Amino acid sequence: MTMRVANLSFRYGRRDPWVLSGVELGLGAGDVIEIIGINGTGKSTLLRLIAGLLRPVRGTIEDRPGVVGYAPERFPAGQPFTVAAYLRHIAAVRGVDPRSAEEWSERLGMDHLLGQLLPDLSKGSAHKVGLAQALLCRPGLLVLDEPFAGLDAATRDELPRVVDEVAGRGGIVVVSDHQGDLRALPGRRRHEVRDGTLREVPVAAPDDGSDVAEPVTMLEVSVVTSKAADLAERLRAEGHGVRTVGTARPGRTTGTVVGQ
Ligand SMILES: Nc1ncnc2c1ncn2[C@@H]1O[C@H](COP(=O)(O)OP(=O)(O)OP(=O)(O)O)[C@@H](O)[C@H]1O
Image: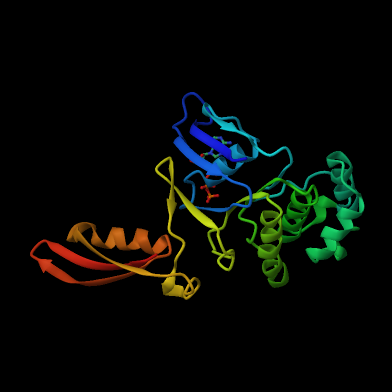
């Protein structure tokens, strides 16, 4: 079954500007969707809507899987529990084997944190607890907001495997990942939030060598000179290789864009 985001619009208050407007997205079983966009553009808002933590002001989200795991960008580690007690509590609430708390703790390299109180955790450690609570419920929809930020190298390496496993058993994974740590995952799709809308963008990024295995198409693009630098910057931000090859005639620059 495909989860469907249809004509979704959202603003935080009646007098606030629209953050998202007319967003369309289909999410099928096994999809890994990467959400990119500049700061403050609405990625976290979209993720919270997809996870069901915010309701669309207009439009609908249909056929969301029953079990949702959501790891926020900043885990609110204020409760006076130890990490072990908190994760066991979440496991109980989610109706999963309490041992899954220990399993995820081991996998995410956080056994040394189990006896610590949540308010005493560093930002990075709290972030891991946020990931563990999202993962231990065996989610059909896993929503991760900047999961790689502040993670140690071992966990950074492990997380793409975790995402792959969730997708491999038919789960949907939605991740905001501005650092591109999921680049090794086959089949992921990338969408950009910009100016309130969402659109799919190609994944290839031959410039940094991250997706060299994917085929690359050369496009020749003509653009007025005054807009060339801005366009090149936007395309690079999306992961394309861009090379300016010269001025075709006065007032115009021809650029060659390398992409998928
Ligand atoms: N609780 C809130 N109340 C009112 N406005 C909010 C709230 N949360 C976010 N916003 C506004 O909504 C817009 C989108 O914010 P959001 O956090 O979704 O962006 P983002 O792309 O995730 O940003 P970043 O990359 O910096 O995390 C911003 O203008 C922000 O100020």
